[in-house]
Length: 606
Image (cartoon, rainbow, N blue to C red):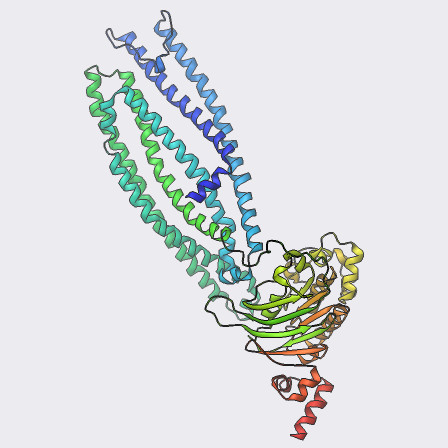
């Protein structure tokens, strides 16, 4: 609640404007109701001798001797004028509240959440499903908007209205007011109980909504696999089951709300029964005028309506709290990788890399993924990283641009601990190509220039030539202005990888990291990608993660990892001669001609 109120204070000027309009609208409504009561007493005085005189609100009785028709005309004109004024103010109120919640709060919150998501470490995305993250940026942000609109402003207006109605009713008659509000403590107990029980239901609804969104996103991204294996019916059943679970949870919430709202209305209407009984008695005793009773009845009706709206405010509050907690979990998530107080800014590094007794684990209590790695990579050198699945190859690459920070030891670039370097400058010095590189739904030129949106066409084409992509790009219908489909679906795997390499070398980084870029391609495509790699690594320090011998032979040295430890290192030929882990992995593959000769010679000698 404190966080939500603090958020609302950021828009205090707009909230005060909206609140001020509501105060004026409320005052006009009450004053108009009071004039209606005066009009009734004026009419009664005209037709009934000895009737009590009208009591004008705030003592604003007209001076002089006014006859009943003149007074009624004056009152009618005043009520009409106030009605026109209320219509204009209501229009202004709707414009202000719409601008506040839909044009300011929601876009700003979405921007903040997305900005924080971009600065969070990969650990957050590993721990939270895509569907849950999408829901936080969309639905949960709307919940915070509902707090400002449906809880804070409406709650303040409700409290102000109740206070104003209560003061007016007490001024009219204290005993009648106390009698009509005798059930207020019961109403408070009912509301408190409802609020305490409904919030866990909204939390569960959010969780089920995340599961539904996850099934939907997985179904969309995995449509090819679903169709290939003929699992459409199974996936439909899974989605329908999660949809039904969410619907059942929503039905449970609706049932609780449906029981609560009529209970509040019933308690409110009991006040009307008290008014008719006791209020009629006071009118008969001439303690209260008929006009005052009618005004009191109108005020009590408005009071009851505001009390009844409490159910909506409480319900909205619980929804807001459930959504707010999830949004604040993102905004409060720790930034595990940040700049030091006075970072070292190096616009251009040379590319020398050293790992000094580096160990890494993904969380407290977890086992080490990397353990005591100690090696050096000279400027301009290319090393290959080889190892079985789970050996820590991709994690090793991620430590260099600080996707994660080491648990123990140091990673040095040009002799400087990467944790001391300014983060953005560090990453601008590193080009990275993944196994499955993401291409955006944009032109080829925009995808290549993703790391430098201001790159000229000459630089873009130069990067494409280095990556061996210029020829096939030139054959596209619109060349570099051809729009790619989502994830580059209208390109082959080799073409996507060559564009990814072009994107990585556009900014001319001194350090190039390649995370098994030929893992999911065929032999012909592998040859094309390897040619692109040969062009890209020229003049750069390169780390190449791979499991194929044809790829690793291009490296000056190969580091062999097993269970997060460095167990072998050397050139391809040296490792083949040692008959270790690297040699046995080569024996399971179809090696190239040179490796085949070495392998055959050792088999014969054995």
